[in-house]
Image (tube, rainbow, N blue to C red):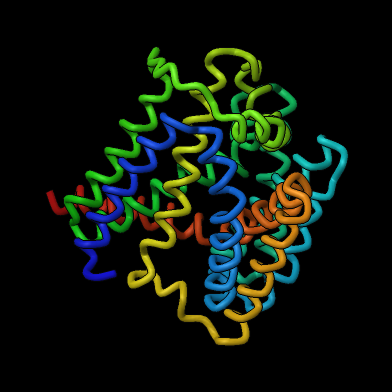
Length: 306
């Protein structure tokens, strides 16, 4: 792909391209990218994370983290889902910071209990965990990754990309109506988006028939698309493609199976990919922790230098 500067320039362009298409055809973009680019992202990132021990302190931590992540997805009771999600979130944070299981247990139990109490008291903490598997993962953590890269390389285009991501994202919440009707394909697959983001729309109290719903879908399509493209654009920076050949072949095989499921039953493919999507979110929590701390360290270092 080239130098860091060239990659940052490409990413700036990718933000603008994602923004333009998401305004014109949000439903179609979201459905197609989620179906065909999404699984490639989830699989290659998890392969990359696996080679780096998922950024946890102990080699076999993922053997506990992954089943707990699957348990969140498999839980039919909404209350149980949030309890397990909270526990696995704080457990992942502790795994990134220490290998001491006593400290991990204390940190996980204490912060999980506090978070649950704040949710029961109906504080904004409940919003955080509703948004964590989707918008916080995609918007907040992607922004942190961009910020860390821009700070490390003192990259003008890196900061410009972050600024463009914010400005373009805000545009979806302005009273702008392009009066572009969804295609028959988009309308046909709209129920799949209903199923994927029902909790998100409930949180914002937006009806799917509301005029604002198209803007929200456009925003989701925009950030999802750029999130995927950002990952694949940084091949030369993070070396996500440099994994052992057996793992790479496994990734390709699973991707082929996922496309086959889509060909057989598109709706079934979406359900299967939700599982894969959620698993990659959970397995990334330790990296999110380290990157957030690194962002804080870089800001502190920059202020000291002033």
